[in-house]
Length: 317
Image (cartoon, rainbow, N blue to C red; front, top):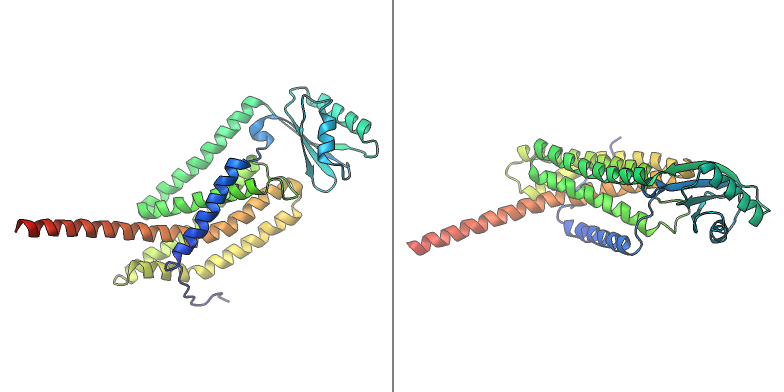
């Protein structure tokens, strides 16, 4: 059964509404970056990260003040799941010493709980800096390769449209991570897993965008006398059923991962859910509309230059 049989939505004529929505979300994301920043994980900051379970409903602030007595300065303490706490410290002591001191402090300050260390991660400062630099290079490199690929397969205007859509997706997802990092009941730290999620988002968004571009190129050869904007809008409607079916099925899988995948995968799966939704939106209201506007702008510039040339010729005569 085919969904959305013969749709005729006005995507291109209403593209300015999409620009306003995207511009607002990007502006909010930038403001959140400037005021709240991003919560970086131990992969990019360095230090020791310990997950302690079976601590009941202890207040994270009380635990942080208590742990400052045995660790080098106040650590970062956040809830982890329903009965766990995540403790991150910049202490450079041996991991076994840190674990022993943390458990001893729990028993001394909170004798009613039975803490158990279930996970420990250690990253050195130099390695963390290398990981951070590598993550930035990987994302920028992926964007550059995608632009070149689209430019060679189609033309440079399509490359700019795809690049704008992908950048749009990454900025908004990062903005949501920044805005809700202390609100949602799970960690939104930016670590290697989240970088992998962003690269997955880039690939997913590109997939939808290329399908629309390919149909546009096909229709431009079939409807050579029709206005360019109408051909692009027709192409988007003809691929809409495929886009919706793909997005819904992918969203079902990522949502299951979000709700049942456990605390460790919550941030990763949350990024994928956001990426599917925003990537589907951008392939319709960002990528193709930008290609249309670039073409219209170039045609207007060429027409203006032609009119100037004709006026000069008439003046000479």
